[in-house]
View 1 (cartoon, one colour):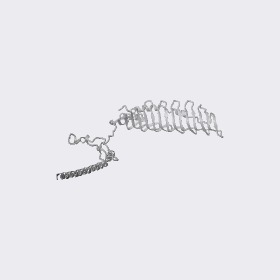
View 2 (view 1 turned 180 degrees about the vertical axis):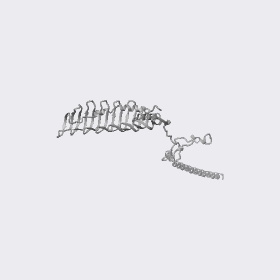
View 3 (view 1 turned 90 degrees about the horizontal axis):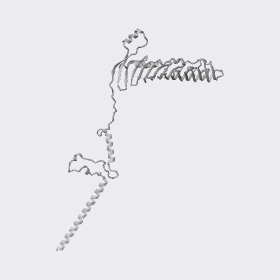
View 4 (view 1 turned 60 degrees about the horizontal axis):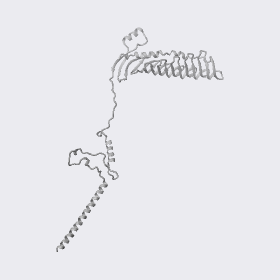
Length: 345
């Protein structure tokens, strides 16, 4: 994949380098605070102290807080070229949090130390590019994210004195590169990750011709390294996993026991009442046999101890009545026989 060389990255970084720090000259403010016109509060020594407005000899203006004739605290400094700063001051220098609007339309908002961009800050360049991250002595330094407006690409990683360096990720619209950077160029081993799901592993190397040219020219700038692919991983398809309900045979003993208890609770007789099973019970071995009742002929009556006892009582009473009836019949027959014998005599 020779088209995935460092050329694309270097073109993006060139646009950012052209967004200059030549605006730094506009940040130089008038240091002679006691010169020019002043309208505001003073202390007992006649120094500018408190809130005041100043018209400086170079055409700049300041509206804010003073302490012993020095800009100190919150204030707004406007340059005659159109740039202006709104933020905190310490002894005539931008210090703390502040926003600087440059004449070319760019803007920095963040931390300042001793008139320098220092700490965390966000810079919006005139061409629409943005940087959000750490600063040190006016330069991008540490970890930060630079977004290229024209291409939509994004560099996320390390910076050293305003140059991309260290572990980083360069993100494009449909792929990204992960690896190391040095002097604004990718170097060494890394990989390209594509949105379709595959990765290309390899390394950025410097060809022998480039090395010879550098030695002849004795140039301090390194030539852009070239990408050499070594491996392409296979596409890994992802399929969602669907959990299946466990079959009765796979059910755990505890679940089976719980199911049995539920059946006993719902299927048994409660308080002597009769219950009917919800489903008909069939016997596969009885299919086609005439000597056994069909499933529909099977009684659905459930055994009840109380009812069974009542049936036994009724049966015993019936037997006793039959015995008494038989005894009465036997006595009646004997009496009839005696009467017949008397008549015969």
